[in-house]
Image 1 (tube, one colour):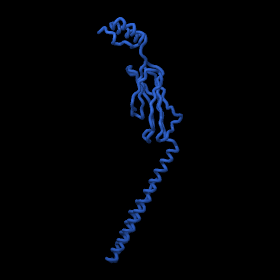
Image 2 (tube, helix red, strand yellow):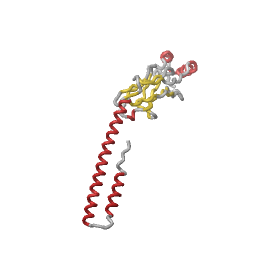
Image 3 (cartoon, helix red, strand yellow):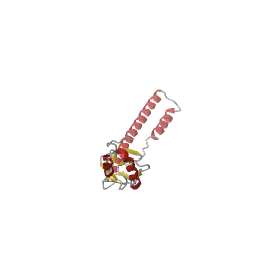
Image 4 (cartoon, helix red, strand yellow):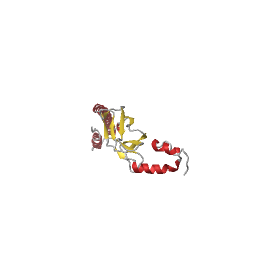
Length: 207
């Protein structure tokens, strides 16, 4: 092991400054003693929340998430999750202040459960926060439902018109063929009735 001064200078200033003045040969002894008397601590379960007062959000709204571990050896890495999907970037904090993550609710897929995870490099140190759930504002949901139902209603009206037009055209065509080719059994009546039943069965619109 080398005796240069650059190895761990600046690491835990109280011990390292003294150690670097005398070379690095005693560095590992100091680290060992430090770990015995001042063992590194795992982070606590983080406090997690939103800076917004309400968890009901609208499309296009900006949201800020806050995550903070109140204890544990620094530095601490903070990772935010939407469901099981981790959100980038991971935030490294060398102080005890909370990690903030900004996001925009662009669509309904951005709603749902969020949480955060903290880890500080110690084995099995990962800790998760409780989750929170963003929901769509009642007004926004009503607007979306109105737009969706209105669109579906227009589609149904167009389909009904098309079906009636096809039925009328088929009836006229069958009647013309009967005038040209008269028959005692009038099979075209059965054809028209059968077509009418098939088309009518497709005119139901469910909301």
